[in-house]
Amino acid sequence: MVLYGSPDRPIFVLPAASGTEAPLSYVIQPHTINIMRTLALIAALACFGFTAQAQQNAAATADPAKTAQDPHMDAVRALSGQLKDVLGKVQQLSMANNKQLQSASGAEQERLGLLRTEIAGMMNRLEKNLTSVNRSTPETIAAASTEAQASMSMAEELIVKAKSGK
Image 1: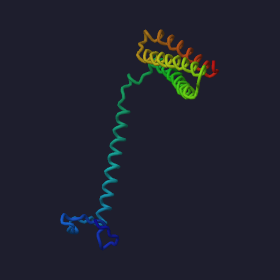
Image 2: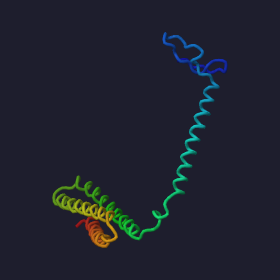
Image 3: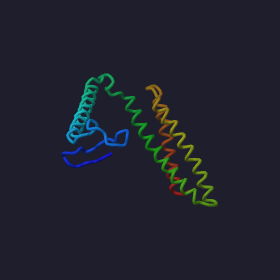
Image 4: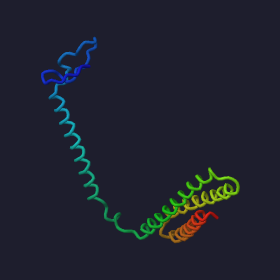
């Protein structure tokens, strides 16, 4: 492989099979590189343009019946978001508890071990509530909501308990 820098000599020469330089037909000339760059740029811009146009067409042809607001789905989204928020707080509490458990000893280690069990149970309960809320129908949303609200209040109590150290 040979690299040259002057305009009257090629920039890049491929080695031939016998170890000598390749014939001039295999040489990439400086103007050839510029043409290849230009073609690659045009191809990339064309792909980008077609993708953007396809996305605009898909958004314009959306079914108006599907985009109408559904009060059941709004309630599910709101409750699901609240459950995810509380679940995230409990997961953070679990990570903090696990770090404390590694350096604890004696009675503190036993207390943190019991708290760890409570946290795991609460995470499991919240995940089940989240599943039941997301799968609920307009007829079952009331029961799922009541259960989810109870679980969220219990989780908040657990967070306060864990932070107080009791």
